Length: 117
Image (cartoon, rainbow, N blue to C red):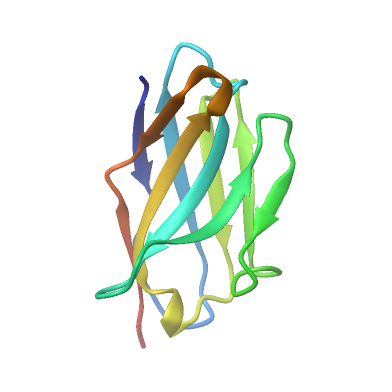
C-alpha cells in the first residue's frame, strides 16, 4: 500500500485560508479515490470532501462553498483549499486514499488545523 503524507496545517485566524496537501507515495495514483476527513477533540472522525479517480467531488454540507478538493496525479498530490475558515473547522485533518476494486485503503498521519483569533 502507498504512504500518505499531509502538510499545510497550522494556526489561522477566522476567515483565513489554508491549503492542505497530501502526497501519495504509490505506484499508481490515477486509479485511487481520495478524500479528506477531520476529527475534532472528543469528536468522531467525519468526512470533509472526496474526489474520485475520475474527478467527481463531494463535500460535507458544513464545508461546501468554502473548501475545494482537487488532485494532480502527475505530482501524486491531493489538495484541500480551505477558505473562510471558522472556529468549528478546528480539527486534525486526515488524507485518505482508496480503491475498492483493489481492496486498497490508506490513511495519512494527520495535520492539525487550528482556527483561533
